Length: 544
Image (tube, rainbow, N blue to C red; front, side):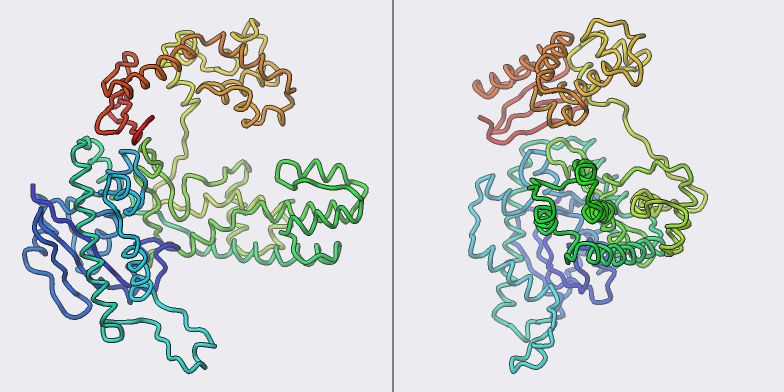
């Protein structure tokens, strides 16, 4: 199949970093400046679109030809820009960045090139970034610029900087060559067809986007702004301090008022500190204000206003293989995978109150407007008419998969019946009938924390990291807890060491090693692969 390698340089007055490529291309100022391309191994060609040159007919035809693979590094950018600029529906794209991520390489072009042995010219890289800032990003003209003798322009062109424009052309052509070289080197590792289909679906999802209630998001921002101003004024009146967000400032204040030195002020310990200083109304008020101001995830509302296009849909919110080798999606821009949960019963009422933009109304209905703003974030994402969103999550997914991989039968029996793994784990660890382990039982708490922390080789440190001490467990209890969990899960413990040994054998012998009936370790071309039952492979570059 013919491959058309592409790299473009473009311009828009919308920030690509803040708003994403879809909003970037909706600006009336958006345009493709340079179009670099090469068919298969042919020499790289460069079309200067900004200065009147036209794409050849064969390139225009290839862009919509399903039998021609269009390849680029971070191909979503090229595809969306080209579709918008030429008003096309291009077909059959492949992304070299996704291919690199799936093999455990970094996500930037320079890093991948270096990792596979393409020596980067650092001077050219620095020059390229300067050229992008010169021709692709509008300049901010300050008041001092306007009155200075040096005349600055918001946008530079070939006429303004002919020498630099030629360098820009060379830089674009060089990127096509580098990207093609990377793709050819990575092509020795076959990318499964099901992954390619999944990438195509991912692009379809990103193109569709989600509908945002812009009015609600903006009113939430306004409420937060009013509330922040109100709390800041109270904070200043009570303490005489300026900035409620300054930890150093309030620590110094507490030291001066009480003589006590505070090591840290965090979400975890702020309630304890309020209790410790309950005799100092000014300090507890200041801590309470800090707590309230840190609760609201207002940044997500701001993104909900910035990112959507003209039709109020936010696009480009998911990154395929964003978590690198595992293939898990990562969130972008609004970060849909990391939204606060909602636990209030009258969510619809809360949403309507936020949408009014009236802080006083919100305060009349609820004790803590900050918490309500946070819990209502999900509701600013709205389904189409006649549709609804369903929020779901896998139940104990890590524990289920681990039990299946290791063949820990008693755990599989639990999941195939009542599913109460925390209770069953505590029962196995402490030799107590499962019926005696109730929801509020201390043994269930120990079973739960053990399940969350210890399944993948973790020990005392993992228990601490998972908050065991904050949940009332004592330090001297942790090691016995680790031993009890491991003793009750012998197949899982054996699975850890079998996996480690087989992986080390594969690396030492540059060979393929069967870990068990579900997993295999393979070493090929300086990459260790662990083949999963699904057919996907985890990749580790240059393992030792």
